[in-house]
Image (cartoon, rainbow, N blue to C red):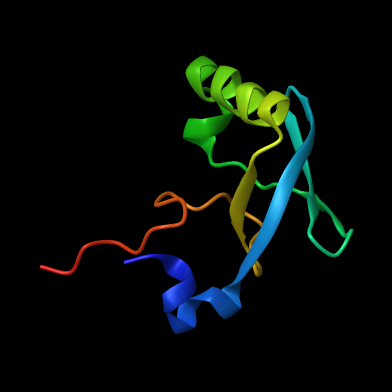
Length: 83
């Protein structure tokens, strides 16, 4: 199920990555708010993550970011499958 079909959408910001420079990722919300994305220690130390986030930046894709902690969501725009 897509995230926009669930009440959890209220806790998510739609944002576009506007700057990627180690060790920072800056995003801009759809309302123009600038957000420093908080990275996990795994993301911080993962060279593949940095390559991927740079490609997201270059492609100007929109990503979901949690409102409270300003972290990228693991499941992208999908809800986790319920077993």
